[in-house]
Amino acid sequence: MTQLAKLRFPTPPSRPGESVDFSHLLISDVGQLPVPKLDLSAEDSAPYAHGLIRVLDDNGKASGPWADYLKATGSVKMLRNGLRDMLKMRAIDQRLHIAQRQGKTSFYMQCTGEEAIGCGFARMLKKGDMNFPTYRQQSLLVGADYPLELLIGQVYSNSMDPLKGRQLPIMHSSREYGYFSVSGNLGTQYVQAVGWAMAAALMKDDGIAAGWIGDGATASNDFHGALLTASVYRPPVVLNVVNNQWAISSCTGFAGGSRKTTYAERALGYGIPAIRVDGNDYLAVLAASKWAIERTRKGLGPVLIEWLTYRVAAHSSSDDPSSYRSKDEAAAWPLGDPVERLKEHLISIDAWSDERHVQAEAQVLDEVRVVQKEVETHGTFVDPQPMSPVDILRDVYAEMPEHLLRQRKELES
View 1: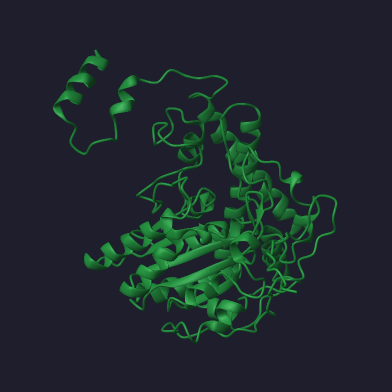
View 2 (view 1 turned 90 degrees about the vertical axis):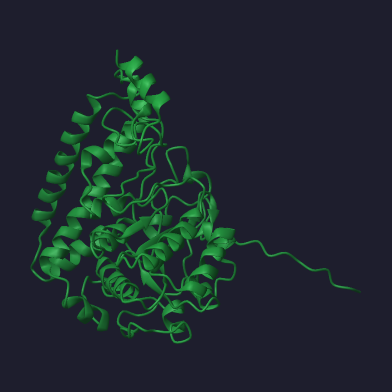
């Protein structure tokens, strides 16, 4: 009798009411992977694409070759600033999520649990570099010291919004801070990043591009198109995959296929070296970002980084994760919370304390609250403030056509 073929359907770590099982995750021991040479080839990067670069152990102690590598750049001050960045990002998320629930804005997306990745990576870039982000990389802006009133104003789409209400809330854009306009069409950032990097190389600019994508969008054609083009032309681009385990309500298995392979390993087939990093370890983020950015800036070609992390919050303010995953899943995540891990590390080296942490949380929250209240005076959905119709014509053309100049004069009169 002929045996019929059977389909395989990926299963998540848990469903509502079930116990959580993350035993399938590929997690290397701290210090297991050495720091490779900058000219690492795709073939030689296989252990890095399958393993996991880690610096902090479960007790907050930094050890191994990547910790030593970071010492040349890192400092206690840098780590304290990183902790403050993450606390600030978390406070922004909390305040704006509440504002959405109060009806003050239409939409919001949190990056809770993923703060270390953007905050750390941004600190290793320099002016002239360009990120091509998704809608959950606002931590890149926080790490780049983007003005808080502009970040919040864009979410409220009021007169403080630098985009004049032309984008959905959380789809920020800032050339000055190296943050390309966010697109709601996932995957497009990768081909744009590769194209921008090619242009930078042709113009002999030393800026590099950083493309960002989630695990779910690796199943898009743009992901593979970008890898193919990058492998052929070898432009200065760092291709980032934020593997946060969920693509809205679909578990990462639907995009990842076999649990025995990683997203980083996909780059190897295109001849692009790749590394896989603990995205909840701020020191590992700094070290891996430093290595990848230095390699790319030296003209050694593209590199892909898979950041292993967990999306603690809902996909967006329109999502209810309790309908598709266990309420205990975040607590069971084996790589912990990035804020707590960096806090414990700083305490372990006598550079922080629980008292200072409580004080820092209060200071950051107060800073965000004060700016938020000021921005809200310029208008919310609950209390809209009139804006000049002339704004619709601003920031559209480098040289405004004559017919629009006439219309603007009519509107101003």
